[in-house]
Length: 168
Image (cartoon, rainbow, N blue to C red; front, side):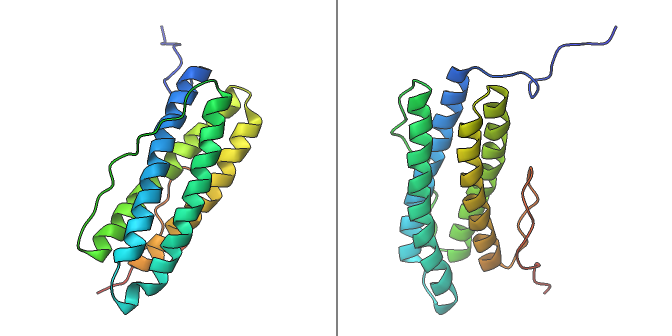
């Protein structure tokens, strides 16, 4: 007899569980704000001036994302977190950009899952708010991948635009 139990991915989550996941996302937004503020100021060299300016813009966008996610957590009846995830630093500019790209990749994967979860709960407006965040997060991926000379990784529903990897 086949197992008819729904998989973890198929099980709808509760509003409380969604709020908890959004609080993890909020902590990641705080991490991104801090990283972008710091990295934009410490990147050195002519080749990084353009991306440093973009990182300043990313910081402002991440603050807006944090405001949006905080509002949704409050709407779900929970208190938004005040704790950021740990920010990695390095003396190597490429390493910092890699940290940012890895974080953006995780963020896009998580928000793609949040959209599905919101829709399962009938929270269509919340899903739409998160879709708008994904648009900007994917643009951040493109900026960072381009600065690193890489393609944007194919993630759940993510576009793959950006420069092809350089061949040595």
